[in-house]
Length: 205
Image (cartoon, rainbow, N blue to C red; front, side, top):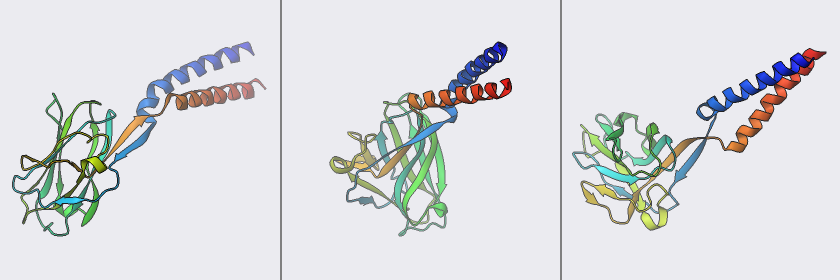
């Protein structure tokens, strides 16, 4: 009987160590950061070199996705694409993608970037430009800083065509993927220990 308990204790220890090593990568939760409710103003177009750039400071290491409000009702979506880039403080381009205008919804919050690893607390710049469009491209919404800035955009610059948009922030949401709180891992560890000890008791009979 003693041998069973020794084996079960060893298995429990090994299982808990393996779980604690793998869990932060496999078992995660989502945190959403978004603007407060406010009135919006649209940038009329972002085509032909009129780049819209928003500085932001991420709160966590893994950005699951970034969404912005796009209104494509007044533009042609027959051709062209939205070029998205995120540049870091020292690492250059941290993310780059192209989203075909034909894939855009007529209007609404639209995911433009996914699964980005960043350095929390560092300043990044999100840049948007419509390229090879049939007209001036879609409109992008922004909010007044004092009313609606989320944590990432607070005190950061929004520029359009190289010129600052004073007291304004991009209408955007940042969704993060983060590990669970330590208390949750403790609960999982107790569960693992219970299951192994329960099986050991069953084998003893």
